[in-house]
Length: 243
Ligand code: UDP
Image (cartoon, rainbow, N blue to C red; front, side, top):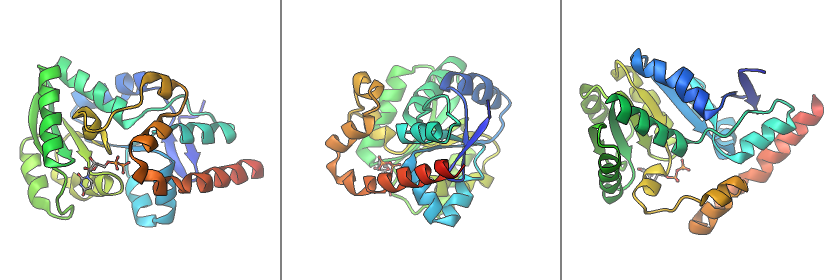
């Protein structure tokens, strides 16, 4: 089985969430090895292929994991099946548990002010051992190094960035050099879910691979973004036929 599976020239890490956390992330946290994780869905793959600079940024990541059933289906069509979805939200929860168990410190950056406050409260309430290094809302100038320098001085073990793509990966890439250590991951709208502003799809919907539809029903304004899904599917199909 291949460790890396390329979907439309984006290299995805082929693993399960459990193995990934246990064999890759836990040792890196313990060794204070700086790590950049991108969780990419079909929208990100398409955006990256349309925006070479963004593609270069995400290709500097140590890991790109498949977030979204679309990427998993694409890998099956290519006859190089990725083992499972490794989503940003699920990984965020696992990172909280790891931090809770080991006393790692976490910084939360992103979302609206009221949302991030609520999300930070929830984290402290649910994971009493976590050292919350701090938090900040996400309505910032991503090129301004001031906030990044402030965060770097806290030396957090985990930095979760919820600015939505492509801003979150751009922020991480731009300020990464200021940090000596840390696991950095963009988590999209996860703080909205954590704070209870947006509901995550119930397990039934997740198991039926319909999480995207549940999300669309909750946030109909996202329909425009979904227009690129047929294009993604078509490209993958053409590519798989050519092999
Ligand atoms: N957001 C932010 N700053 C911005 C734009 C967006 O902090 O300048 C936050 C927004 O409040 C939300 C998240 O980023 O919490 C974006 O969520 P979305 O589900 O759209 O993520 P995506 O799917 O785009 O990665």
